[in-house]
Image (tube, one colour):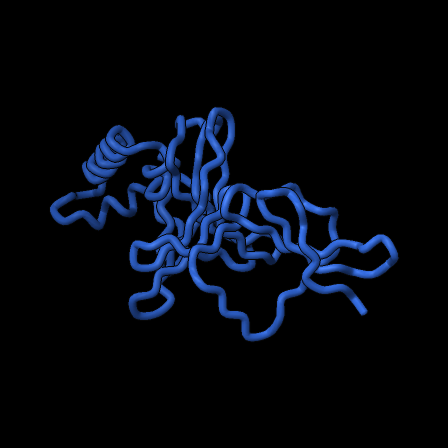
Length: 197
């Protein structure tokens, strides 16, 4: 048989026949090959392709490793890795919604992806079952913000008025080359807070 299994400690290819010789009570390994083949077929018949592929017949570019006590890592040398948690998926990766934790061009990305009939879902950060930050087309902070350094803003066009009980803080050009700090409320009229001297 052409199938091989990679030994974890030595990374040496091991044939089904050689591995079968290790099964207690099997003489010559022939029966062992049958046992392993049946076991492989049983796994593939009862697990999804994605799960079965973790244990059998895939390239070794997805590796789970123990880094230290109580520490599991997803690692493959200098190759950036990604972890997906699916909300929905149609087995063909054409239509899906999934959470993403990955490295992309030396940037760590945490978020949500969708394709096909999948819908763009919100992302929330919780603590103790309470929403603290929501990402739903805008960033919604629902707790106090403590800044130990500074907040940098840039000039932009005046934004549209927010909804009831909200306000938008922004920087805008005064029309004479000076920067103004303004706030706009649901009424639609912005209020000048400070002007560049």
